Length: 194
Image 1 (cartoon, rainbow, N blue to C red):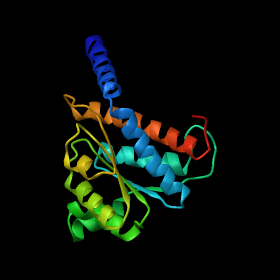
Image 2: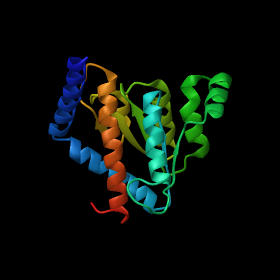
Image 3: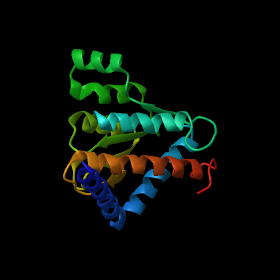
């Protein structure tokens, strides 16, 4: 058991070192933060989506912005597409592929941001939401696994975790990115020290 624990923690550390050593990482995260800051400063909102653990990350991102992160401040407009009644209604009446796109079509506005999270970058429902967002004049931030995937290619800013043996390692990078983005957004809007 001890060997397994040490192995898992060391593997996670190695993935983070690989992510940080990629010369595009910091610039891509900065671009994503600037997109969010510009939208929020102009009175727009951020919508986030993903499947499974990625939906949990999308929800965490939205609740930290509407609630609080490290300190008290005014709430920032962010919504995760995570209403089970809505999701099951849409999946039943249309298809699971449509659950995020229809929400973006109904609630998204020009100038808003969509944060699409997919460890593979190929989740069809996230890709359809990304297309719907682009058609509405929204900006798209992609949080994915290794670069070169369809979601990253569509994005205005893509933050791509390095290749990993399992998706949990990619998700661990994603939560670090989410926390750093929230911190950067707060700092960029004058709510937190950088």
